[in-house]
Amino acid sequence: MSLGEQLRKAIERLQNSSSLDKETVKEAVKDIQRALISADVEINTVLDLSKKIEEQAFSSLPAGITRREHIIKTTHDLLAQALGGDAKPPEKPKRILLAGLYGAGKTSSVAKLAKWYAKRGQKVGVICADTYRPAAFEQLKQLSEKAKIPFFGIDGEKNAAKVAKQGLAHFMGFDLVICDSAGRSALDTGLVKEIKEINSVFSPDQKWLVLSADIGQVAKKQAQAFHDAVGINGVIITKTDGSGKGGGAMAACRATGAKVFFIGTGEKMDDFEEFEAKRYLGRIMGFGDLAALLEKIEQAKEESGMDVEDLLEQEFTLETFYAQLVAARKMGPLGKVMEMAGLSQSLPKEALEIGEEKLGAFKVIMDSMTRQEKKNPGLLNKSRIARIARGSGTSEESVRELIRNYRNMEKMFSQFKNLNEEKLKKGGIQSLLKGFRGAKKKKFKIR
Ligand SMILES: Nc1nc2c(ncn2[C@@H]2O[C@H](COP(=O)(O)OP(=O)(O)OP(=O)(O)O)[C@@H](O)[C@H]2O)c(=O)[nH]1
Ligand SMILES: [Mg+2]
Image (cartoon, rainbow, N blue to C red):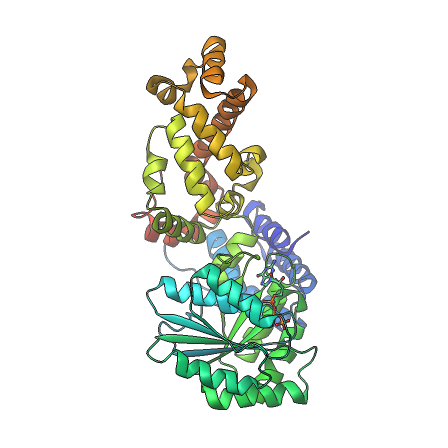
């Protein structure tokens, strides 16, 4: 069972118990302890959290909420705090240096981060000061081209500090310069020497450590070692998608006082987000994550020039279906978006795997339909399907496939629209999300 599932079980115990006495809370705390320990959270953090939950559970009750709601909210808040609470990344950093061990995800994070800040209106350049691994230059060059971010590197140069220095001159007048550095299998003297040299010529205001989620609580040791060597004022935790130990890494960073600003959630360029402990918890516990979803929708809107929210409001015709397919592709894997909405179980797999080619075929088929048919796919009987297949030069099976996908998607989007009330009504979770819903209501139409 994953950390999220185990935590959800604990919260559900609190939700569903007929009487909420000290004993029930103790049992739930035990569930939480087991969950955190298997996610590699340090024992001291676990014990500290347990003590706080038990203490606060029966403290004085704030007005307007029930004891049950109070206990669930307290538990949730304390859990989020243990994972690091909220640490907003700096809005206008000038120079960011990323450091970390071999394969932690530095180079990918340089590109993701550059894109993230560029999206927020900053003029960003990236430098490859990894002169250790021969392919590093090409890797960052390609990633930055993909993200449309100016790149600087000196192919074949061995002196990392020299590259950093020239890079800085090259990007004179830019708002933000992000510098990649080489990894090693351990924080040895060679790495420390090199990172110190880069540090002195690049003089970054932000020195962030990149850690992979799968190292769990070892994150603490690494964070401390890097901090002692060069001083670290931020952390990026990568690969939170693939490891159950993300919680361990986050809690460990929290324990050293290092703030986790971002997390990597996959290999793609947009699989990267600001770390918010509550949002992360909501996600792994399967309560859906509307905040992250909204962000993706906003982003897709910007990139596609299409208003996805409006699409959701409209009548669901074949044309909206097609527009949504196109928008969904821009949003990245639709599966991920739905996962954030807590809907992954109800996904029609087929609809999510529609590739570029099929999208093209659907377009051709739709061009052979009348406007009425597109508006009301219910009209599509056997003879119309045969006519459309002939007209579009495709097969009846292809036309049927389009209709089938449309129907699946229609089902999914109607669930999508109804998700909120139903999801949130389940017991005390509603109160957990109340503030959040209130804040987002204007932007995201919840009915
Ligand atoms: N699933 C997943 N993979 C990631 C994530 N971040 C990075 N990776 C992958 O991890 C591998 C290593 O990433 P790099 O960015 O090259 O790591 P690095 O720290 O620069 O590595 P060195 O320069 O060799 O020390 C690559 O295959 C990345 O695609 C993430 O958040 N999720
Ligand atoms: Mg690298």
